[in-house]
Length: 237
Image (tube, rainbow, N blue to C red; front, side, top):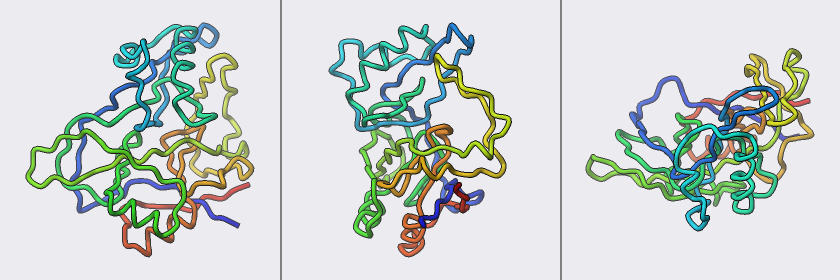
């Protein structure tokens, strides 16, 4: 049976990397007429998605909340460009990462939930070793230092959910906009039936800031001496 682990940036690191960056395009937030929430909770980025061919491309350049119907229209315009069944929450990002970077970056850099980075050499070694589902895309980051590193952004789509047993007081989602306001549990349990079988690294679809990796990913990272992430095994049910 496959084991699953939560990944997070280490509390202490010898690397000094810092980003001041954002993606070229994003879905707007929304204002829901039913639950009255105004929100943008999408932390997933699709750096390979180019919306420049859409006549509404300017609508994806300025962060703002939109009425529910307008948000839905803009979401459906980009849906054909992303992997099937992608949740596309308000605030979901598209296109390359643009901005500035300073300092040094570990082979796997998970300090920013919206911007997981990897060195090209590390990505290739992971792929050759059999890690599944990894896609890296070029960034448009600018360095002021000499000999800057080449950094790719990992596209890590959402899959899988928390098991209801670990969130007994979780309120129901808004039936119209999907607003799902709850705190990540101290003792998370993964819903085994919802976990993907085709990839070794993913986000939780109901908590996109949480990275989950399979035992295959963890063992490979250890063997290749790429460890610059903390990991904790999570139970499944």
